[in-house]
Every structure is written in structure tokens, then in C-alpha cells.
Length: 306
Image (tube, rainbow, N blue to C red):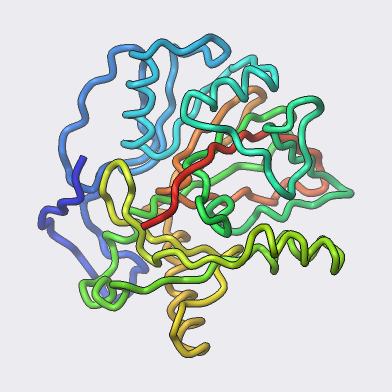
């Protein structure tokens, strides 16, 4: 995969939020090579694919791991149905891609500290219904996350993902030029920090000080340019007046909201989603309140954005 973006027709009627243009999963329009060890069904032209014929509870062969990794880079988020996983098997699957993180703030599944449990319902409404990239406040944010549906409401509670490579490609040449060299500061204080007392907050701020990342990061494996700011954790753009920073960030945040760059998953029990956290943002719909929704997630350590 390359970062080359061939010239393609663009149709802009001056009214639509996103001009109409051809989209592809990699951005370079190269034909997708076939997958030999599983069936793969794309969900949209650019992001999301359902994989069948793989049991995630079983150890992965090197050949299967290689094909799944290629699919992850190509489609950014993979969906697996009917996966009977224990918390340990969940962690072990994720560990094929790196070291599972013990999250510094979120509650854990019993006995498996690498598995975070999200329990939402009448007494704990969701706070994940905002476009974001996991833990971008860290010096080395996660490369990916594996999320499993434990209990879902009868209807609602879908999760959406947005392709930040397609979002970057959709910017005008003038906007791309404006973003060159810009860095934005990411901070947990206005999100996780609101749940901490003063002593706890000071301790966590020492452990996770605010960090600057490029506004446009380069994917370390594909070389693709990606928008890398999000509403939860991005605070401001370095060296830019506050009003200008806020206006530019608001515009960039909104690029994740365009349906042309998104896929949407309707969960069933034991569905698993595995996404590339470097290349996407996600949004958990809060439309199921006051009903119960329980999910478990393993996050995989990553590298420093550049």
C-alpha cells in the first residue's frame, strides 16, 4: 500500500457536505488481492469488512495472522460474528498484534486486567457517543482495539467507525497545505480527569502529561496520511491563537461525521470488532438508554505518531 492518490473526478455541487468522488479502502485504488484463509465481505467502499470462517478462540497460524493483518490495514475495522471467547481468549487474540494495555482509568473484567468492561444502562448512561480515537492523550497511543459484545439491547447501541485517511484525502489542496507541520495537544483532563479528585488528578497528570501529536499523522505501516485530532482528547493546536485553533479543530473534528467515510455495525451477542486505532475514529451510539449494554475491550499498545 502506498500514499499515492491518483487523480479522479470530483463532483461538487456547492451544497453537499462532501463532494462526490470515487472511494477505495487504501486510497490508491489498487485492486484488492484475494483472501485465501477466510471469506471477507466489505461493508462500504472504504471502511469495514465482515470476516467469516475464523474462530478467534483458537491460536492463529502465522499465515492466518498475516492475512488478517493485511485485511485490517486495508479495511481498518474487521467484524467477526458468533465468537465464543473467554476474557483470556479475548486477550490472547489481541496479543497477536502487540502488548495488551492495562488501561489507566477504565474498569476491568474480573481477573483479567487487560480486558476493560463497559457496563451501561439506566444508572450509567453512555459517554462514548462522541467521535474519538482511543487514548490519543498517551505518548504512544494504541495501535488497535478488540471489542466484544457481551450483552446488547434489543435494538440500538450500534457502533460507527470513520476512515481518517479518506477524510484527509477529501480535504482541499489549500487545507492540506495549511495543516503541514501543525501539532495539536492531547490531554485526558477534560474527560477522564473529571472523575478524579484533586490528588488523583495531579498524580495522573504527572503520569500522563499533555502531549503534542501531528494534526496529520503518517500511518507507520501503509504510509497513508491521516487526520489525527478528536473531540474527547484534543485540546488545542500549538502556537495558534485560541480562536483560530478552535475554529480549525471544529472543522477537522467534523470530517469524521460524514457518512461517506463511515461504516456502522449492528451488534449481536458475541460479535467482535477489531479496528486500527491509528487510522480511524469511532462513535458508540447512545440511543439504547435506559436499556443495558455490556461490552469488553482489549487495547493494544502502539507507537508515537509522526
